[in-house]
Length: 199
Length: 255
Figure 1 (tube, each protein chain N blue to C red):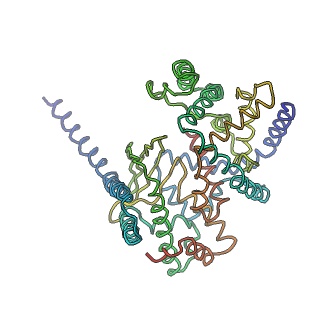
Figure 2 (cartoon, rainbow over the protein chains, first blue to last red):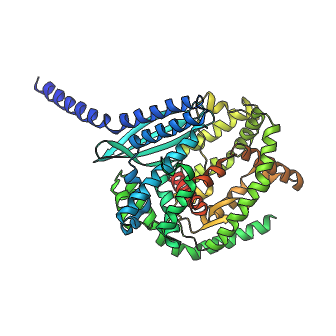
Figure 3 (tube, one colour):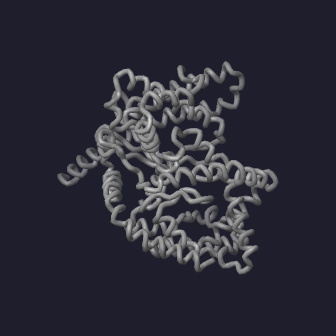
């Protein structure tokens, strides 16, 4: 009987801890991704410039829920971040967020009934890594999300087939910052964004 | 032709010996990084913030590489892309897929040998079983029953990865004309892999070149638009491609 109670106690402990781990970042991520997928299905319907503008706005709003753009911007600039003035930091974050949202938006056109498989997550303190696979008609693309918890779980980096987005942009931005400087970089971003720089 | 290839191969092995000393230095930082990543210590990323210049690869040939990169860019838009697009337009996709599967299938020796070299008996077995099944039931490898029915996953293995798994560092980054991104290690490895490529054993040189061309164009027809996307997303395409290649390869080796 005593043994039984002990096992029961341990089991209940395990249950509690496992549910505590399982119920964190993944559901939040899943919710946002589902919202994006639903939007992609709508994409085919949106043809007029007005509906497209609404969609663009919606995507950005989902993006704000899904991504921690402050964290992303800070990480992409790496150690250069500190050398920026407060205004520059704000402006850079603003531009980078819109740049990412815009890429996301452009990629929507290519949506052809891909599905997302959730493989699992590992958590460490306030950070979490969720592994997923995007199943397309042709192949499967591994996609890892790194999340950080502030007020809620948000993504601060995505790795596609092992290539981290933050790290890739950091390499590029470092090069530009060394050669040119932050003002030039932001001008480049504005140019790339074109009319969408103030969403 | 083989003599000259062998010569270049030897040259690069010698060169890698010379450069290895330098690359070890760069590699150790890389190594610790992947180790901590394995431990799920995300704090590594945090540290990354403050002192990150994270040199993704040593690039002493940067000037030449950038030049070759530009050349490849032009080659892609002026030559490879139009050819592959025309080919894609006139070739039904089942045919293209069949050809892709066929070449994948006959490339089994490269994958199997590298699995052996990496001491992965199970994956070696998978490769051989897949080859046998696909070559027979799969009609000369045109289809992939190994994947659809037996759920066997093939592993893209090459000598560059094998060397990487032995702890050989990237050496330095190279952009090859026509072939694109590589590193000293991967480029050296590709010479070994060439010996395992059945296409290179076709005796008539014209047939061999023809077959290689079909393989290249066919493969490219599946990858249309990829390069454009990368370029479109990038602020500094050269650095983007370089870092992407290095990260991708590191991940492949880690697996």
